[in-house]
Image (cartoon, rainbow over all chains, first blue to last red):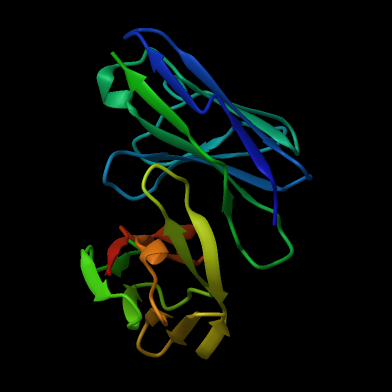
Length: 115
Length: 108
C-alpha cells in the first residue's frame, strides 16, 4: 500500500479565490489522480497527474479551472481556481503504486466549502 | 461509455446476517475488480481485490467474480454495525471506473 498525506483537510473559502491542495506520498508512484466527490455522489475523476508533463484531464474539467502540478514521483498539487459555491465538494488524491495490480489508494480528502 | 452499475440502496441487514452487495460492469476487457468501503465523511478504503473468476475470501469478506456474466459481488458474513457504510465497486480496464455505491445499514 501507500501512505498518502493530503492537506488541508478542510477549508472554507470565499467566492472568486483559489485554493491549492497538496498530496504527498511516502514512496515513488507512477500514477497519481485527483477526484471530486460531491455530497451523496460517487467519485468523479478530474485528471491524471503526470510527472514531468501536463496533466490529462477528463471530459468536463479544464486546466484553467483545475491546474495540476506533479514536480516529482511523490508529490502533486491541485488548485481549484476562481471558486464558486458549485465547487464545494470533497477533493481526493489517489495513487496507484504500480506492481501490476492496478490498485488505487486514497488520501483522506479535502473538504472544501465555498461561500 | 464504460459503466459500473450498483444498486444505490439503502440495503438494510440485521446484525449477524450475511450482507450481499452486487455490481455489474459493461467492459468485457476489464481485468481487475475492487471493493472499497467508505464511511460517511471519510475517503474510500480498499477492502477487497479480485482478478480471476471464482471466490476470494478475506476474514468476513468474500468477493465473487463471474467474468462471463460481467458480475462481481461482495458478501459480508456476520454483519456488524461497524459495517454500515457505502460500498463502492470499482473495475479496471485501462483506467479504474467506480460505481455509484451501495449504502449498507446493519440494524441491531
